[in-house]
Length: 114
Image (cartoon, rainbow, N blue to C red; front, side, top):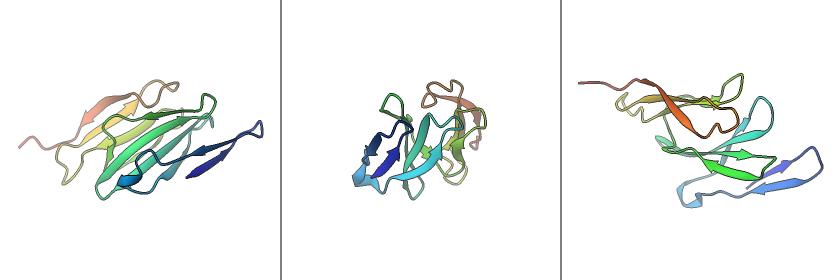
């Protein structure tokens, strides 16, 4: 469970949306502090969500994340890798819209082509 104290004095309590898969981790707030990136890591990646504080909405990032980078970009939006086990099927994705950073776009396919 993660507790978020908001500027207006209200408190949001987030429960793990996938408790059967592991512990909920707080990756961190967006650069503008409007959203929070959360993960449930597994051994080789996991699932990820963006919590929109003002709207009290939780949005899952489709496909989760793999080994490698996951986090906020300086101007907002998220960058992450999917796959990346033994560098096969590894893809780098970024969100282009800071208002809906849970919608990811393929930036680079880093997988082996053998």
